[in-house]
Amino acid sequence: MSDTATFHEAFHTAFHTTKPHMLKGSREYARQTLMGGLSGFESPIGLDRHDRIAALKTGDIGFVHSWDINTSVDGPGTRMTVFMSGCPLRCQFCQNPDTWKMRDGQPVYLDAMINKVARYADLFKATGGGITFSGGESMMQPAFVSRVFRAAKEMGVHTCLDTAGFLNKNYTDEMIDDIDLCLLDVKAGDEERYKVLTGGTLAPTIKFGQRLAARGKKIWVRFVLIPGLTDPEDNIENIANIVETFGDAVEHIDVLPFHQLGRPKWHELRIPYLLENQKGPSAALKDRVVKQFEAHGFTVY
Image (cartoon, rainbow, N blue to C red):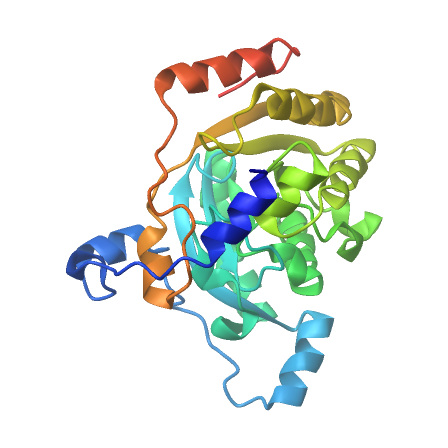
């Protein structure tokens, strides 16, 4: 049976029941859910739908799920990571399905976000950190993100975009110029596998990586290793060949082992979760994949 057939068959299976310890009110759920919330932001609640759409297009507001301060997770140094709401992909292994719909986020004023960056600017500079936009898919809100990045650059703050690159055309070259680093998710090495895993197409990701490289930007490639889905040797070789087209822009590849921390969110949202019983990779499997990438001359973590 093909990967595509297996996917469609699994999609029609029944919902799995969330156990009591996974429910939203539990400490375990809170630990597994994006932390930080939106405390400290003034939200433009009074805007009607028409005004919000207009403000979204200009970047005067952005729809944000949450934010957090972390270290060496979403780029170098101490970083403010902002999780934007909205994503066009539906990855089987998504850890944050609660960020898929833009309307589920909270609208935040552009000035409020810029002021938050300014508040931590000295910390960022001291640690070599900065601001990272993640999601969801932050490229769904290019005006807001790019305007915050422009302001950050004027403050001397490092900028990082965490993206799958699927919305490549949303970013102009001028917007790319304000990105210091891109965490680029290369989820599969061929169009058929990419479609099964994400519902999207691979070509825009490749094009975006090549555009970043052409404009002298640094790239950390991210790849999620899932036994039986993304681990075949030909898939790894295809990804390595793609990443080679980004040239010297690539600083390293992160091989990220699949985990189940996002499973309670799928249950809470009552979305059929195809990877309910999926296990993470063994140390031996990860070692094999790391060696495959290293054989192409990449630094791999």
